[in-house]
Length: 140
Image (cartoon, rainbow, N blue to C red; front, top):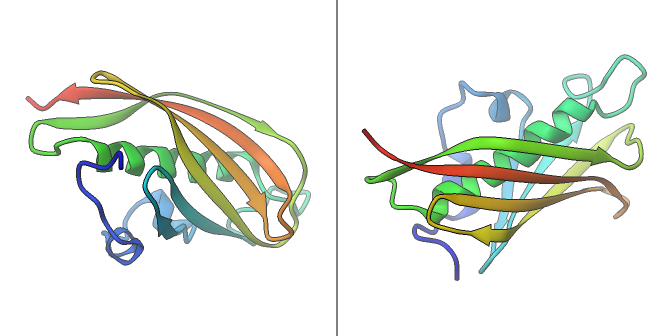
């Protein structure tokens, strides 16, 4: 298991509501030995003008998953995790339903974490793949 602190999906979803993930209704659904999973609705909040999932919303889901995963891997009394770089390839459009992001580690080091986040439509087709690099910094 990679987690320093393990949280249930219910605990992760019971966080303050004044942030981007809550606005987009991102919900954590599963915590496993080395993966973290969450869903996000595809609706008016996450659409772009053409009526399909906005690429930026997919990036918010990916960064939310990777950032929370990094937080779960560190001692929060000593360190904090901050996004350093993210990229995303948008593979196919999604018009409605839920998308599910699955976050897996590519590298968990002392100073950086690298996560791969694959996002799937509710039809099981991958619509986005993202890689997030998180810097692990000492708290002041």
